[in-house]
Length: 145
Image (cartoon, rainbow, N blue to C red; front, top):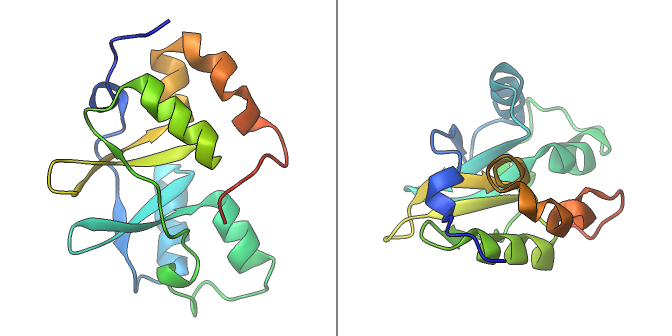
């Protein structure tokens, strides 16, 4: 069953971003302060990567690296999969499942970062999509590395 909901209607709009050279200490501090599970990384207004809690665990903590000596581009997931702000929720859920991601950076007409769509956004706004998102929540589900 199709909904008439488009990504821009339910995405998180005011998202903090960091740059490629931001230290991971600054990234983690911002994530803790704002209670975020991800942080977008951009360069010249365009998204270049995303750092999730999973990325921090796998690429920083498990490696025993100091967050003060590591920069964002060393940890972020890249390439990232983005979705247009005018895409439907059906397209977004299909893309999330296909790539195994819980966060989709949302881009505007010129490819600029305008928001992020998360599984939480979808679940809260369109609960009928919950069954389609359950695989993403299973431990060990394919993740883009």
